Amino acid sequence: MNAVMLELPLDALASPGVSPESLASEAKFMLALKRFEVGRLSSGKAGEQCGWVGLNSFSPPGVLVCQ
Image 1 (tube, rainbow, N blue to C red):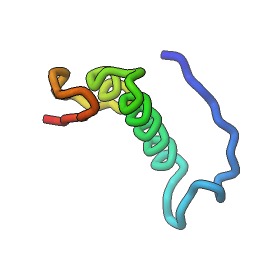
Image 2 (image 1 turned 30 degrees about the vertical axis):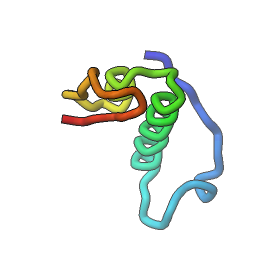
Image 3 (image 1 turned 90 degrees about the horizontal axis):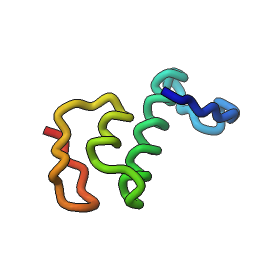
């Protein structure tokens, strides 16, 4: 899998008590969600990128459904 590295100051994104790993996971989810919303990613691929299993790939366009 390819990786993308973003250099941002931690205090620009993190909330008190949020680990860098949690922040990275949230950013990965938000990127997949946005790419799905704009039609650049299928629901199945968005789910794969987030580590989800059991996504309904036959959901209506623009609707992400997790089973």
